[in-house]
Amino acid sequence: MKKTIKEGLIKDTYELILRELQTVITISYIIIVGIGMLFTFQKYSEFGINIFDYADVFDFLIAPFSDINILLFSTITIILVFILFKLDSFWGRKYPKFYSKINFGWNKKNWFNLYRYSSFTLLFIFYLSISSDLYGEICAKQTKEQLPITLKYSDNETIKGVLIGKTKDIVFLLQNEKVIAIPITSSVKEFEIK
View 1 (cartoon, rainbow, N blue to C red):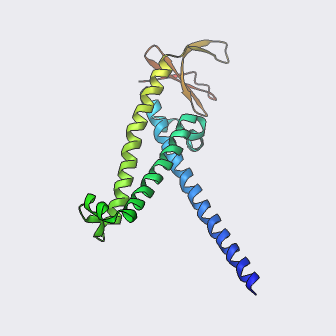
View 2: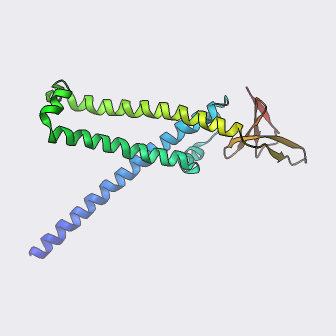
View 3: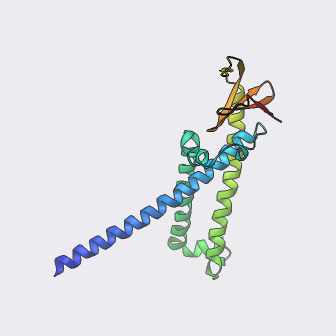
């Protein structure tokens, strides 16, 4: 009888951990995709391109994985915020008097948890905003320093420019200060983005 109770407890614990892990992975993926969308938007907006007008859902689902910098930043950001949140909790348990003093005694109020979660969320959003702006500026600078490439149309006409990036359907080139979007699968050769 004891053996079956122990096996049942282990099985229940295993299933609980598996469900929690699935939830954490799903939420992390959604956050990473959101971060990828923000960073991709900032990268293209430096050139006056609203990438949401040209990209489809699939482009954004793979965006964090197409640029290792976005993936690393997203993962580090999520881990860092999680660690800060856990340190805050640990600090409140380990040094309750000092924690209460630093928080002006608000931690004893019933609304403090809402305030705490909101503060961490706003800090996370502020951090992402600043970081994505910086990422966009760095990408723009790196793009402008690249050597031009040559694209050849199906009618053998060629065009030169610096590759800004591409989506599934469009290639973006920088020619001097002019941004050109070249559809990959259409009969339209190019169009200028102002």
